[in-house]
Length: 300
Image 1 (tube, rainbow, N blue to C red):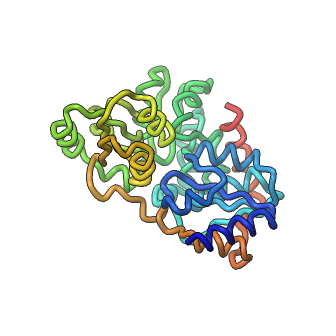
Image 2: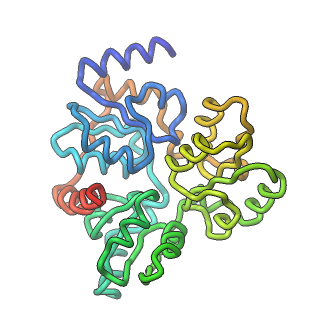
């Protein structure tokens, strides 16, 4: 393993490359990354990157976003079939039909969506920026795609808006039930519960904190408590357990794993640097349309 890390460091410098990894990646992949973050942080870092190559350790929509914000750089997704089931639930045609049905509405898409979907929307958002972006819009009607759970959470903080929800969801987060959250609360009476807004509304009712992946990490780091129950992907638990070995940190329910996020291995990262992987390619229409909504997100 040490030899692989040394090869990655050597090639990274030779090829002027930067490695960006999501929090849900395995710890060994995070350890070779220049930056680790959530979708929002990676979008900003990709735009600010001073390099020739970007290796995005995550899922496809993240690498697409990096390419859109950096059209002149080579962007690599280490595993081609690392996709996002939520992103696959909505198509550009779905958005077009919604716009016909609600012609006065602004269209906001969660960054967990494809480039072609982003190209049909007015602005993107992340879980951490969604409420702020929705409330900044002048339109009273807002179509929100694709995550109905995040959209329902946002609606509570935007009482002056009519939020039109698409019936999409993250299978990993949506699998958590209200019963599981209730059980976690009963079995851990002294714990603080922190969950991601991609979880169902009935799960959020049991939380002490609701926020993005980065927000959950920050909450645990700053909260004076020895016990936490976490309602997001297991990668966050692994980070926190390594940082706080003396705290009791548990998942809200077992088997909280995003299979696609775990597809990338440290060998895949090395192969990108060795030139065995092809860079990300998008059509000009996808690049130009999606760039507008992504840049508006970053500016807001």
